[in-house]
Length: 364
Image (tube, rainbow, N blue to C red):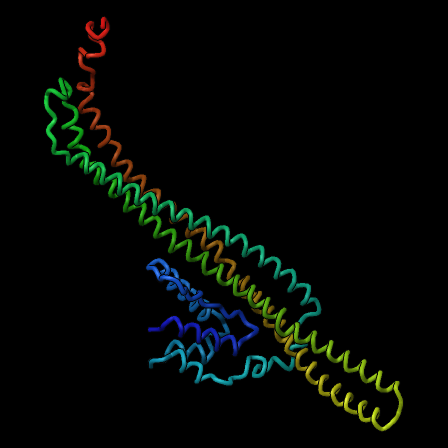
């Protein structure tokens, strides 16, 4: 059994090892009062988190993932951190790092920008679809509650123990017959409640969870793009700016003259330029490796786009099954409802006299 903090630790170790990959983020930890609904929502989110890790072509072969999935001891949160403490990131161990330049096409930056915008638009649309499905699920659950209340009220009516006297009914004795029939119909409305509840559950599990998984994946891609732009790309640009500043200082020191002090300054700056050039080369390779990984992760997103068609198929089948089952119950209700009026169609007439129509009331 894994606790919430174990998943947090797994995320931290994976992010340290694979900073240029789509490492999913666990759901946030709620600090306020924890409800049963929140626990269930977080359980599903953690299941999706683990699903994305196990399905990832790099993560599922990682020793980190295997350790998390197979370790039988306690205190996983600290054990996994100790086990992989100081582990180098993927760039330091990948044989592709040295040849990253050959792996990145010339137009990668343009293609990356286009793909990032496309996936951002995809995220927004899937997000809206997920909200719509959640609303549909909520309405089905509310229908289930309404049908159950309807059934309870019919049972309440059918259980009326107060005798209806001839004084009240006159020549119309429909109420006892209708009251007896309502109990049978109440059973059908209870069945309707079950069908609507099952429909809500199917829609949530088969459709909502599929959309949620794909949405989590798209969000993870967006996080990766942000890490690339705010991390290795920015570091590379800052290193280039630092190199330009050092060269400017060297040029200024060279123009000031050839005394011994200035010569020492120039030599010191030349040493810094050499050191900075080495750092820039490493950062350039990191940037190229990150771009290569971005291309692979972008292709991974596209490899999972068929989830949209799978979701549409699941949605269509869920609605077909749900409406078919609900229709069947309504078809069972119709003849029972009709029988109430058929049994009493000859009795549903007004009394021959009424206080409102009597000569006495008209003359008064």
